[in-house]
Image (cartoon, rainbow, N blue to C red; front, side, top):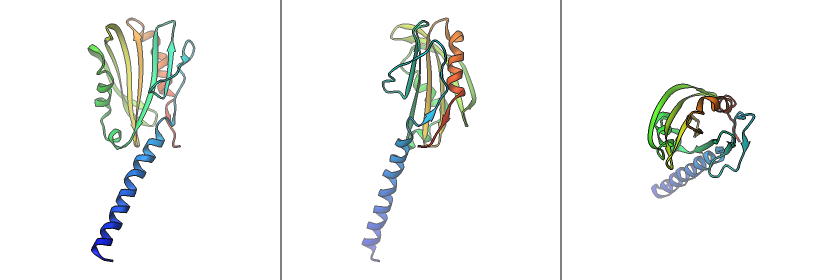
Length: 164
């Protein structure tokens, strides 16, 4: 085989692998199970997330989102959790715990801050699994996070990444 044809074959093989890996990773987005937040929570259109629920009586929302690809595979969960609260004003971190979320170790945090000027408390969890990062976010009015925490825990407890 000539040098030129060898280089072409190598380029085709390498080029073929890169899109395949990216494509396979994108197929994993949204392919997982989670627990249900339970009574008082209604499933709603998730917008850009995978799943979302609201508790209208408490004025709270909960959502899960997955993002897959090499960019997410290598990021640290604590750094990704920090990115999730970047839109809050006056944010403080109240708690950070590393713990199991499904089959992997992840990070769970609580924060206090203002979202569009409204005081809120947030529960945030982030876990990486294979090529994906999974974000869980509970947004509550001040004074209700503890009361609504069991719904967040139920969603986390049911988390199980599933291959397509």
